[in-house]
Image 1 (cartoon, one colour):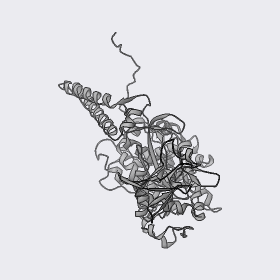
Image 2 (cartoon, one colour):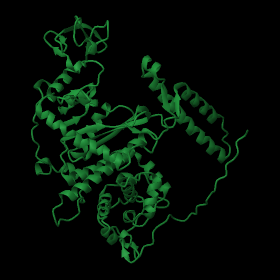
Image 3 (spheres, helix red, strand yellow):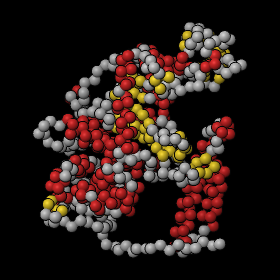
Image 4 (cartoon, one colour):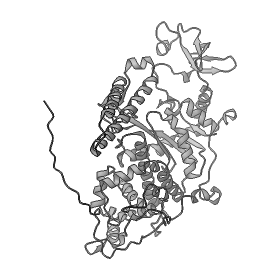
Amino acid sequence: MGQKGIRRATKSLGLSPQRQLTLAGATEREIGVKREAPADAPRFKDADPLGLFVGPQRIDVLLKLGGFSWVFTIRRLMRALDWTPFYAQYSTEGRPAYHPALMGSVVVLGHLLGRTSLRDLEDLAAADMRCWWLTGGLIPDYSSFCNFFNRHKDLWTSHFFEDITARVVLALQSDASKLGLDGTVVQSAASAHCRLSVEAAQHKATRAREQADAAPRQTPAEKATAAKLDSEAKKAKRTAEIATERDAGRSNQQKRNSPTVVPEHDPEAVNQPQKRGGYAPSYKPSIVVTKDRVITGQTVHPSNEAVQVPELLDQSERVTGQKPEIVLADAGYNVASVLNEAVARDLNFLCPQGRAHDADGDWTPDSKRIHKSQFKYHEKTDSYTCPQGRVLKRLRQRQGFVQYRSVSCEGCPLRAQCIKEGEWRSVNRAPEDEIREVLHQVMQQPGARRQYRRRQGMVEPVFAELKGIQGETRFRRFGLANVRAEHAIHCAVHNIRRVLALARARRPAGASGRVLGTDKRAEVKRVAPAAGIWRTRQKPAWHWPARMSR
């Protein structure tokens, strides 16, 4: 039975300019902070909101009466940002585009209100009075927001986030020498049911390439169809490459337990367990935050939190001008790469080896048997002793680690909790275990415990706000590059939320409500800590052994 054509209602769009609210005596001048564009910059559409009236009342008066004065701060901040890198993506010819500051302001307002889809942004621009103040009455549509996001996806993750964060840190005088580090799992936009095996992905790529090569290319319509087929063939080829690469990185045992599959529409996402239960294609965003819960570093990886740590610390230092000295992380970062990075950077790194606390307040690793951390290593004899005092001697050296095995486990009261019947207990010692043992000693010190308890109040509420208020429970866009841009916007908007909240809390009675000035981003690093901008740094109440300080 052949496919029947589906008729849908169509609507012709005119060629007239996009909508704009009626202005009463509006001018093209800009209020507040204005950054002059270069002489060769493209022309942009922009408007002054002071000419907007709702009935007989001017819009800024209505916003003050409604308790929305914080919108004025957002406009000042967005107009003070350096938008010069965005100008390079526009042409100096043709119809003027909307100013990047105008479009970015709507994006920020939408994320503050938890309305992050492009359709929601279109609705905000058309019907929200707070948004009218940011746009001056101009009403961008869905396609304008879509083009704006895609055109600047690389700048969202770097320039946009860093420019806003640098200003927030300066305004709050936030101390970035002590950071909380954490990551989470956020579901991809891809469906959990549309997945391809390695063989299916390779077959689809071959078939898509054959269809693209066989497509006629004579008329303009045929050329457009062929171009679309070429694009689909490239995507299918990329999906097959990712599936093949992911399959090669898995062991035979893993392949037997679960075949390698990739999401059909977002192959860079990885099938991972969700906090609510079950598995779904997801990414792992990570952040570092200050005591004021300002995000100073952010990035996204398909599946690994640990590999993101150097990038996070570098971005935090670049944005704030302060070198991290103390880093508080959960047990997921107690891995070789992160421990070696902490030693190389001379960090006071506090990270437990377990994921839970027992009745005595110690961290106990998740393990079905007695964990290796409860075995004591003796450097002089190159041996281990178990919790019952029995010796494990060196047996052999294998791929990057040394294996130790017990001499005798007969009659041990903990045998059932340690090994199965007929086995001997063995322990593998990796090169980074020396650092891990020193870290375990540090975490037993009362000062380190008190400091580490503050981590939960630093970083956990940030993810609660990102997910609960801003709606970052599932990414809306496909591909790692788009996901990173989306996460960067969420983090930048969270920092704006923090400066609005803390500015109100710290503002003296009768003081001005202006919390973000016109300081340029470069001035953040120009102000030295000795000038009194940063709070006094105190020495930690714990110590690392001297031999591990470097």
